[in-house]
Every structure is written in structure tokens, then in C-alpha cells.
Amino acid sequence: MKIFSEELVARTAQELHVADLSRATIGEVLLVAQHLEQQTGIPFIRMDQGSPGLPVNKLGVEAEKAALDRGVGSQYPAAAGVPELKHEASRFVKAFLDIDISERSCVPTTGSVAGSFGAFIACTQRIPGKNKVLFIDPGFPIQKSQLRIIGAEWEEFDIFSYRGAALSDKLESILAKGDIAAIIYSNPNNPAWICLEEEELAIIGRLSTKYDVVVIEDLAYFCMDFRTDMGHPFKPPYAPTVARYTDNYILMLSSSKIFSYAGQRMALTCISDKLFERHYPALAERYKDAGVFGQTLIASILYMITSGCTASTQYAYAEMLRLSCDGKINFVEDTREYAVRAEKMKKIFTDNGFHIVYDYDVTQKVGDGFFFTIGYGNMSGGDLLKELLYYGVSSISLSTTGSDQQGVRACTSRMRDDLYGIMEERMRAFHEDHPL
Image (cartoon, rainbow, N blue to C red; front, side):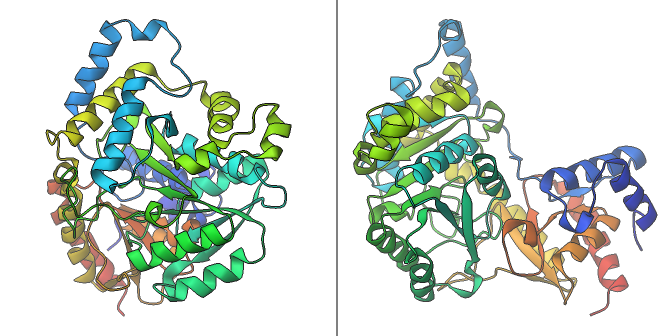
């Protein structure tokens, strides 16, 4: 039995100017779910927005307060970042990736969204004729919206059928055209929670060097592949990264998920030292500067977007990184709750006829974490999104993430202990109303 009538959901969508629920964005689904909940008082199972669902790191808060008490709020922060953060960022990359990146090449951004925006601009302008971005999908829809803003084009493919060695021929067929400036993906992946394995990262690294393409690696869910214990600084196993296989890389490290510091909008763009130092005549001509990649990105691009990052938050991030490197914070254990939630939620769905869409990496079953993907019979992702809304469950269609598979993305961050029983009851009703 449906919780919300089709008429009520349709009327709500119309009032909120959502043209097509089956193709709704994260923000549109969020609005509909919130409105229905407020209208009726009936709680929603919120699987739409990937906002942190754990308490903020208190040590970061205390460090930020202390910075404000010291008076840092009265001065503009340097565009390249405060020295303390740059130092701890370089140390953090060494501690958990075993990669050497100098302090100079670690640059704060107001969230990884600003980092990718700036990186897209610099990468697509550095070499004439190389002006497209390649998305290894599924991925984060906002990044394609950023390319629309700057007028850059992109290509994309769903990695579902190109895992392992098959990735090589697929990538080469696209890169050989010569117009790809950058490759972007997230690892672990938003929305599928798949993780690229070493063989795949080596392929990406080798081909990015061969075709002079910059790899933008989004590590928003850093070390959150809970199948491997990566929470111990300066000790293996280290987090996987393309940085082991090429010098053409930009790593994006966000404070939002690993420290639940999303509201303060703080991330790092860590650039390979060799890429940071490369000189590009096209950048020099456009920006009337030296044309050095890293400096142009900082002073001529990122500064124009945000004019630096909030000073006090930089000190907060620096302190959380420092304590992680010192072994006084174990952010991996702090975020493991997401895996616990995913395991419980997946079981409720699969017990009631659903299947996991992206279910395997190359050599092992996909782990539990911040996201997972579900499908139901032959139902399209858009139809499943709408049907789930009638049962008080919000999600987003995989089609909005560049996926060719049918299903929806589920986020674990807003799940609460008191909702599991409600969710189980609703999915049992869903299964009864939709016999397979």
C-alpha cells in the first residue's frame, strides 16, 4: 500500500516546478521529499542528498574557534593557502597515500566543487585543441554543469562493461582522438561505490602520460573502502591512487565526508609537482602571467572564483589533518558507521526483490559505504525513483549520473536506527504491490 498518493506527489512536483520526476536532480528530489514530509508529518526515508550524517569533528571546531580568537578573521588569507594547512596537507598525502607532493602544490579550495571547477578551466585551456573532459561514469552530475558554465565539451562512458583490462582499449579509443584535456572520476565512486583497482589505475596513468591528459581524481570518500583497513598513518595498506602511475594528476581531498566538516566548505587540490611546474604558452597568453600551471590555477583562476578560502576553516582542516597523521584521529573508524548502515539497508532491499546494480569490482564484491545502487526487475531508473516516492523513500535515478544501467542511487548518510523498521515495512509493501 502506497504511503503517498500519485496525485499528491504529482501535485507537489508541479507546485515546486519539477517538470519530470523521473529525471529530477538531487535538489529537486530533495525539495519534493521535504515538502511531502512537511505537508503530511509522515517521515521520509531520505536517500537523496549525500550530506554527512555524522557529528562534526569537534577538534576541528575547537581549532577554528581558536583561530578566530587569534584574530585571523580580520585579514584576507593568501590565495595559495595558509602555511600550516599546506604543510599538513603534504604530510597527510604522504601518510595515507605514500605519495610525495610538496607543500607548495597543496592548495585549499572552498570544497572540491571549486577545485574541480578551477581544474577544468586550467586543463581545457592549457593546450590548444585539447579542450574536452572525459568522464569515467557514473559520476557527480554537478561537474558536467560546471563544464556547461565555461562552455567546454565532454565525453563520457559507463565503466560498468569496461572493468579491468577492458578499460585499456576503451580509454585508448577515446584518447587517441587527441582532444581530451582531462579525465575525471571518483574513487570510491559516487554513486556506485565501486572502487578502481590497481590494474585499472595503472591503465589510466599509463594512457594519461601517453596522451598528455591530466587525471583529476576525486577522493571525497578518502579511505572509505572499508574492505581494507587504511586508517593507519605512514603504514600500508595505503589508499589506491593514480598518482603512482603518472605525473599528470590532480587529487581532490575534501573535509566534508571524512571529518563531517561539510558546512565549512573546505577541500584541497593537490597537484603533482611536475604538473604544477609545467609551463604552457597558451596559459601565459590568455592570463598574461608566466603560464606556469600551478601558479596560473591559484592566482589567475581559483582566486577569481572565491578569492581565497576562509582563513579560520583552513586552520581547522590543518589541525584535523595533523591529528590524523599523528594517529590521534582515526577518520576511517569514525566514518565506518556508513558501512554498517549500508549493510542493513541493502539487506532490507534485497530481501524484498531489489538487486544491487553495481555489485562487483574486478576481483571482489563491492563494499558497503556511503552509497549503493539498487534496481527492481526491469523497471527503469526514472520509474523506480517515482514509485519509491509513493512509499516514502527518496533517491536519484542513475541516469542523471551518466550511468547506462537502470536503477537508483541510495545514500546511507541520513539513515537512523528508528527508521529501519519503517523502511522494512514500506519495502515489503512495495514488493507485494510490484510482484516480479
